[in-house]
Amino acid sequence: MEGRSSSPRTDLDRLDLRILDVLQRDGRITNLKLAETVGLSPTAVLARVQRLTREGYILGYEARLNPAKLGAGLLVFVEVLLDRTTPNVFEHFRAAVQAAPQVLECHMVAGGFDYLLKTRVADMADYRRFAGDVLWQLPGVRETRTYAVMEEVKSTHRLPLA
Image (cartoon, rainbow, N blue to C red; front, side, top):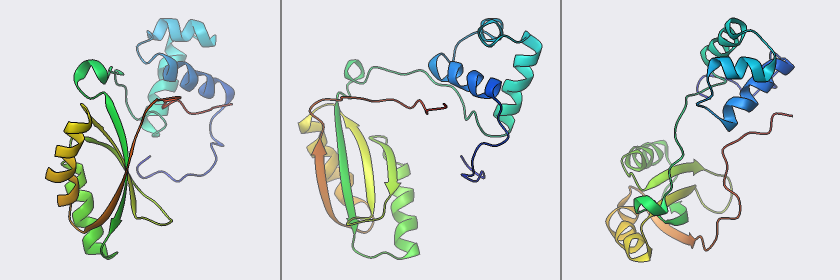
């Protein structure tokens, strides 16, 4: 959450958590149905959802798409080691990653490498093109390690709210 600390959620009550849980499961639920589900009036639920959005607990809504049907069936994780770890190199790397649509997520990590990328491409041939044309051309990249996913056992963005 941009601009928010990762402090405990002390300002959320059980109804706020219930609303967030329901919205995580069905972001298209109507306000009326949400109100019925959590046991509040539609006006009260709307006010809470607006507050939760304003305070940054709700970041937005989106549809989950089927990657295989849309030509992005291969999920690949990539460890990236940079040649130097200076603010300038990090800045250029971050900017270049933002421009690569195949990169779904990019995380700076502690450990034996600098970044972990989550990428999606059509197939291994497409990944090879991506690696040569994009990945290995990213600023500061010294080394990469690729992990092609054979089976997605669990994939969710739902946060545990209990």
